[in-house]
Length: 192
Image (cartoon, rainbow, N blue to C red; front, top):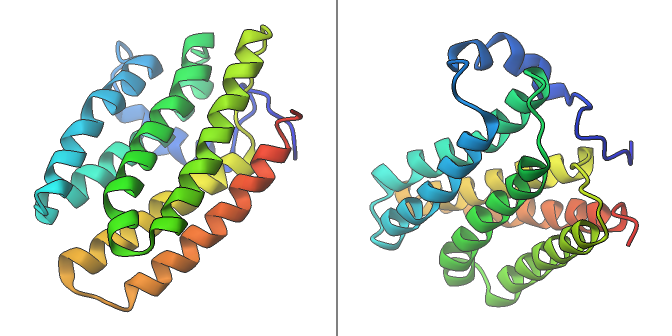
């Protein structure tokens, strides 16, 4: 369970194998999807900053979904690279951290947002230390769960802001709190 083997299939990979991956042309590589996520993150932020939620929320959801796409694509098509193993989680952290800075800090709580960002920074530092030591490790089930919960928590908050569903704010906080728990577990499984 603590294993960080980049080639190990995750449960969502089996679903992606029969739904999304066949729709992606073979010339599109996982690294291209990662770069796309990096390029689209400022676009997401721009629409969210302008509070254009009708455009920003669906784009955020799609860009966040590319995280599942590039990993599944790499594992299922045997296109895992050292570059992707390092930059895919970096792209995730850039997306989720910037949206948390923009939305969670402003609409939930500064300390809560900074706590999430601090743990993400520690995970990034851990990955950089491993890379400097010649090791590039993939994510494990705790990291995957953390990212899913972070995206879900941010999405619930964005829907609350967009549609005025105030009930979604405590659901968002609860989901992001659970994400913090999985982030801490993921951090400890790095073996730092």
